[in-house]
Image (cartoon, rainbow, N blue to C red; front, side):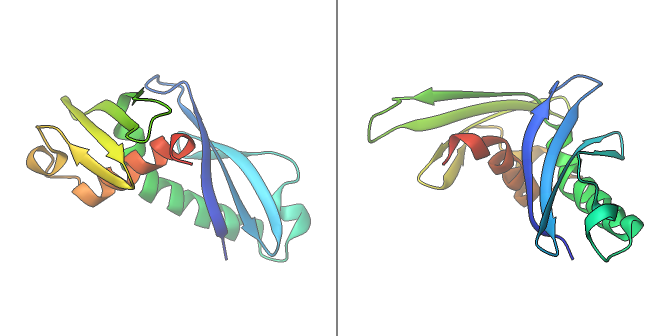
Length: 145
C-alpha cells in the first residue's frame, strides 16, 4: 500500500515537542505530513482526497511504520554530525548521540559505520544493534548523498 516512505526532516530534536516530517506514495500520489506523539498532521492534499483506499487504513499503516522504525530514531538524543577531511578523498562523517543514558560515537565512510567504544550492541538489551544502525543511517541521510 505505502511506497517510497522517507523521513525528510526532524524539527526540535531532543526536545519534548520533537516533530518528524515524512513523505510517501500511494497509488502514484505523494503525501507528506508531520508525526508527533503518535499523531499525524497531513499537508495538503490529504490522502482521503486522492486515493481509493480508506483514509484510516493509510493512517494506520503510516503510524505502524513510524512507531516501529522511529522507536529508536526518537530515543536518540543530541545527535551531532561533523565532517572530517571535508572535500578530500578520505572524507569521513563522525557522529555522536546519547541513548538510554549512554553516549555513542562512530564514523561513517564508504557505506560503513565504524563504532567507537562503547558499541550499541554491548549496552542496549532492549534495542537491536541493527535497529540502531538503521536509525543512524536515517539521521545521516542528508549528509551521505
